[in-house]
Each structure stands twice: as C-alpha cells, then as structure tokens.
Length: 272
Image 1 (spheres, rainbow, N blue to C red):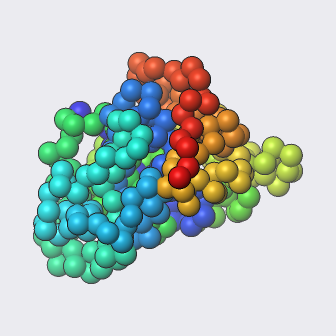
Image 2: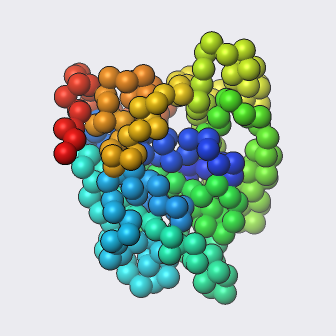
C-alpha cells in the first residue's frame, strides 16, 4: 500500500518542487517504487524530471476530468523506480471544471485508488495556493510534508495551511491526515537571520522538523533546466548530499529498509 505525501506550502519559492523532485529521486534510487504527481499548473516537477510538458498526450488534468486513467498518464523517468504523472498549463482550468463535481474535494483520492498497490510512495507536488487542487491533494494524502525557506518570514502564512489541514480533518474529508515533517530550505548556516528563522520553525514544529537542512545551492537551481534531479546533474554538490541525507532520514523515520548509495559520483548523467 502506497504512502501518499503532499508537499505543500501556499508560499511560493520555498522549495516544494525542488524537494519533490530530489527527495523522490533518492528514495526511488534506494529501492522504493515511487510516483510523483505534478499538481501544479506550472508543471515544474514534470520539466525538472525531463518531461516535455508541451507534448503530453495524457496528464493529471485528463485524469482528474476522467478523460484518461491514472496509469495511462504515468510516465517512466530516467531515475530507476521513479515515475511521474505530469502536468502542464491545462491543469489551471481544472479547478473551475471540478467545481460542479460531486465530491469535488475527493476526485484525486478516487483516481489514485487503483495505484495503491503499485508504489511504495506517492509524492504530490502542490501548487503555491490552498485552492481546490491542493485540497484534493490533502484529501488524498496520508501526510503533509511542509517546506519552509529560512530566508524569509518562515512562519508567515503557515497558520492558513495548518487551519486547512485541520479543516480537512474536521470535515471528514481525511481524518487521518497528519504532518509528515518540516524541511528547512535555502539554509545558510553563516547567516544570523537564517539561524533565527530556523529557531522559530523548530519552536513551532518541534520534533517534526527534519534534522537535515537544504542549503542554498546554485546546482540545485541549474539542474531543472537540464531535466535532471540533482543526483544525476551534480551528485557531489552540497545540494545533492543534503537531499541524500534527507532521503536517509525520511526512510529511517518511516522504518524502511533501503539500499544506501555507496558511490554518488556514479549517478551523474552525461549531458548531450
């Protein structure tokens, strides 16, 4: 049975997509069968994993509207054991089209049911909003992974997300929904501001905060333009090492057996 994890924060630029791509890639490479669902109309998880989002025959948009099945829309990536259900800008119209649907908050949950026995983990990359698509993700998920950028007012607006999670539970849409954890991104250990923001997050979320912090790293920013996760773009970079550590911590928290990566340099893919 797959564990479904929504990666969310209504604030943009906090590393949701970067974390989705790279955490999923490392978890898959270490032996777990993983599906990424791109639920952001920008389609950045899709392009970041090498999918040409402008040439899609099937996508999550079609799945939500019943025009194709989840399996038809699933594409294999260049990472072993990693698959993606991609998105493009057509998805932006889904919220309007789903508004009149019965159980509109549960459409994603229903279409994913046939996939539960096909994957170990399903990561949903949410759009930077708390609109209907994100509500669908939270209704379908077992837990929420929150990414927080330590550069900014880290906790600003998070009360809305926590209230949305509470509402999802109280409205019986998903009583079991829980916070998987909190990942701090854009971390600069030399900055007093960053340290202060990190302390704020730790005080608010306590043990739910992952010990691994993701640094600001230029290679993490460059990798998506090549359609590669950081493990295949520059496996020796500080960004790659950080996401590998996050994957180790994630799998350990979930009490999983996994195969550690002995030689990171072998993961690098030659660019055309």
